[in-house]
Length: 163
Image (cartoon, rainbow, N blue to C red; front, side):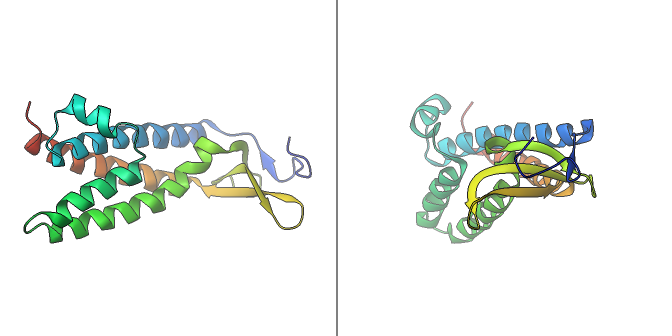
């Protein structure tokens, strides 16, 4: 239990909440791998060498690398703009994933079980810690976007990375 937060505010997670969070985390892992492979491809590196060079980069840095290569390529400005838009979408949906990976999930809102509650170790106000309420529908949207972006990245990888 979180101090100052009684059980009239939240209740335990249901399986559907756990499934939504697990799905989003697994999709984000697949996306991170696909982006690494894509960076390798646009840099003209074999996958193992690309993994060594950019494997530890956060996904936003991988998008940035792809953007820079495309921006500087002849006739690459349109593709660079598309990548920039995908990066913004990634950053938006990352805010949905972040509490799952970096905060304590305390349950769901008692008044609306579609909101999953997270105790965030972040100061708010005079002397309180943050509490995030993330709608399960937003987790589904973020997972859907991540799956689609992974497909796009892997389609490109299959075209530009030698087998």
